[in-house]
Length: 467
Image (cartoon, rainbow, N blue to C red):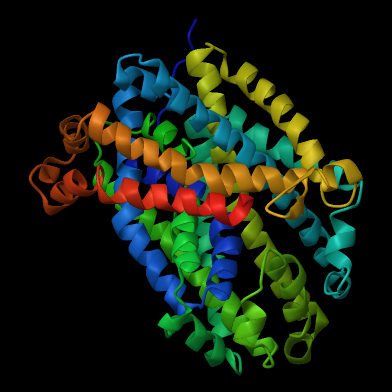
């Protein structure tokens, strides 16, 4: 007997769940890193432009595909294309991509769990040491935290759409928003925070390069969960009574707001607690901005609020990032689970158990890739650089494939499904869409400008990473 498909209980439930999938490490970690190394305000402006004019139309197309087909990415491409094999293969890429992204996402979330535990036990000063991050990610004890994290994630997924995914989002998303706002207000009251605000909000367009533009588009796609099949799957749980354009707009606003405030929190904090910071220091920032540099920043707060106070703020911040990561991780893993239920007729329990086993198989070598195992740490090399197994997963499935899948969604919607079919679905639950300026922009851009932009980003990424 086929498993009955779940459905979100309301439009608010969909918005919170979709925002939960979008709001994650891309907002809380990657966005401040990208903004810091790409000129601050200049990157922010390009990013916002990409969200409004490139990502928003693709978001609507993905959700409409899901709601029209009531299927996962494989089923959606197959159903709407009339069973054409090459489009089914594109749908399979939309399953493989979130599966592999979940691998490196899981590893980073495990690091967050360990950081929260270390800070809670009074270890903020230890984490602020120069060698702390390298030592931590090479500990065999990470496997215990990996098991703990996977138990939480798959327990939530066993609850289904309303009882698991939506319930988690309804609790964590408002909590995350309040915590982020309070922490940002606190940081903005600190001395010298204005230097970070200036860097973040006053553009220096001399910083704009093709690489900055490429990073902005790529990150906007990752931040909004595009090209992963998440929004196609969530669209299949979305009611025909509700408006896709309006709900998509709310998801984009929520996601972008969190990213904006994360930048407004982290960059002023850097300048406030380390007045000697220069823009040259920020231009080389990476994931270490969160795991290596920020513990130093929080530790420097002890002069104002004491060691305990600094530890409390640090714990709140890393818990905030963990909440964002957890909601996204649950969403990412739901995509292949939905495929196993739809295409293989698994029960939800069987699909969840199968996915848990498959993810564990890949998460173990990814966890071992940063010093625990020489084989996985020096897994291969390309672009003249030695790469770990973790690096390969990140480069291929995050940096490279997302814009490619987005490109295929545009081509599919514009030339296979036809814009008339897409417009018809977007008009369901939103009578005002037909004949609107938004519809005219969609009809013009989705088959012309947007796929060209995404194809250029894809080719540019190939040259940047692999050549």
